[in-house]
Image 1 (cartoon, each protein chain N blue to C red):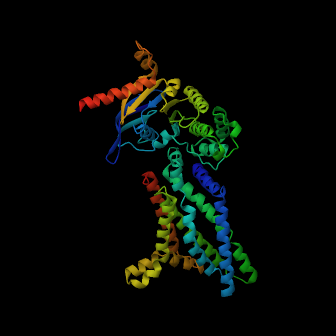
Image 2: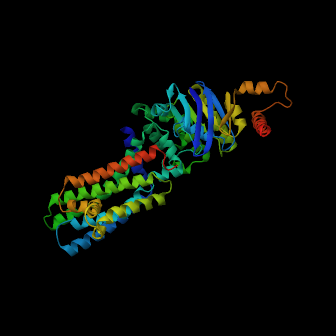
Length: 251
Length: 236
């Protein structure tokens, strides 16, 4: 579904991504991990064609992002870190607007609207103004706008950020349900959440991919003889420490 | 085209979803009314020529207030990312927003048509000169809005966007006042650059191709520059 080949991004003299390469298969839910400033959001913005890469190539569903940006955006649903909502609109008017600008056919709009309202459990607030909604509803509305045009790829940038435990579980369940319909790339700081939903993990540090492995193999491999058993959180910390020590040793 | 219409509708609805649109409409129309009756009372003629010139002067101050948030607000609230990752071209985005605010402006202008009915009641005004005056003031507003749209695409700060609009509009409006300090081609350039020069003809019922080209080329240039600004993410 996604093939990224030696993708780099510079902002002036600052290199945010350094020759990033990876592949994501159709139907996978992939967790994207990294500390603040590691380059997660920049990479997601390149995948959604909001930003252009300084060098390298990205193919999504067989199309080169640099050449077929419009076609690719039709295939992508994106939720940025802050849900992009027009707070003066009602929930259903916002989703209608999202459907219109995302090119949902006129005869499909009502069906799609009803579908995402149900899927994201927004039915009871559909006539409410967005400004009056709780953070959990706003986040689910952000996901609803991202899936209203039935994208093949869903990209979610920290979708559980700032939510309470109940809201987090609702959002995670919603993401997990997407697996049957589309490929999902989801970033998060909370590794326990990624463990719940992802099949694969990509880890990024200082603009470089430092780990790309199936979650099952990762946990199984690391748990061959562990005491106590390793979690993704420990693996994440170990990887960062190992790399920091290796860099320090190298110097 | 349906995406452009959706964007234009959203823009227009956004204005009317807050009290600001109504305040602007009421305040502007109240000022227009005061000036209209003052002008009619003073000139004692069945013409709207001077009314159009007052409108023009007021639009220099009004339009930046209407346009300052067009792109700036989208950037500061993060919804720009939503628009630019949707399957929309920068041209659709620019055109949609432009048509939305132009719709609001047209409603504002439309509400002054009552002035024609009032002068018609008291005398026999030349309908063609009033029609051409309306065309001129509409084209001028459309040009001012395109300038406001452009400056709004440069920054995420609404105040800075408005200030830049004021700078450009003052320059265009007052450029003919500086002709006395220059001679030759510069004098002619400043005279032709001024919006007042071009509206004057419309206000007295003369429609010339050069005046129409002035406004249309100004609008197209600003829209093209806005498109480039959006495409290149110049505010980042």
